Length: 247
Image 1: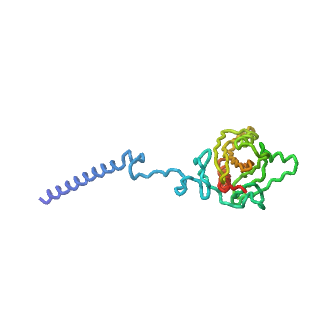
Image 2: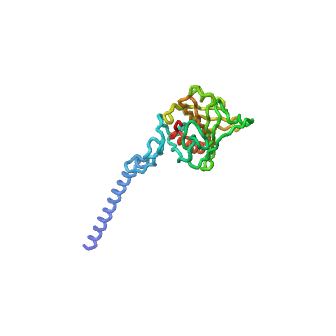
Image 3: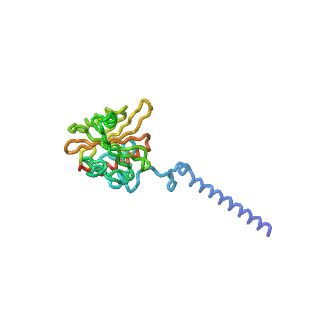
C-alpha cells in the first residue's frame, strides 16, 4: 500500500506541474501577443516624440516677441530661441549708430562699416541698401555674421524695397515672405536660398526689413554655409527682432 500511495502522489504532482505549465504558457501568450510587439498595448514603452520644450510651446524663447505665424522647422524655424543679449547696436555712442536699436548676441563682435570712396565701397552696396555694420558671430563659436543695411533713399514701399535688394543677389530661390512687426514697426521677413553656379551650392538666407516712421528701412540679413550655421545665426536675428526699437 505504501508503494501504491507513493506512486499515486507522484503522478498527482506531475499532473499539477503540467497544468501549471499550460496556464503559464497561456498567460505569456496573452501578455506578449502582437499588440505588445507593435507597441499598441497599454503600458508598452514608446519612443518620445520630438517637439519643442514643454515650458515653451510656441518656441519663441524667453523675451522673444510673439510672431503671428509660428512654424516649426523649415522655412521659418520659429522654435529657434533668441541668443543671449550682449552689447547694444544703434544707440548714440554705440559702435554702430542707427535710427533703431537692438541687442547684439553675447560675444558677437560689432564692426562699423566705413566707406572711403574707393572701389571696395561697391561691395557694401546691394540693391538700394548699404551696409552700416556687421556683427560677427565667430567669437561666439558660430561661423558667419549678421549684416545691418540702411536704405539709400527712403520712401519706397516695404516689399518693393526688399524686392530690389534681393534682385541684386545671386540666384534667389524658394523665396517666402511674411508680414511681421518689430517693436511696433511694420516689418517684412523673408526666407530664401541663394544658389551659386560656381560652387553649385544653395545657401540658406534670411532677411528682416523694418520700416521707420520716416519711411527709412533698416534691413538685417544672415546666411550660413549649412543648416547648422544658419540656425546659429538665426538665434542672433531672433534676438534683434525681439528687442528692435526706434531711436
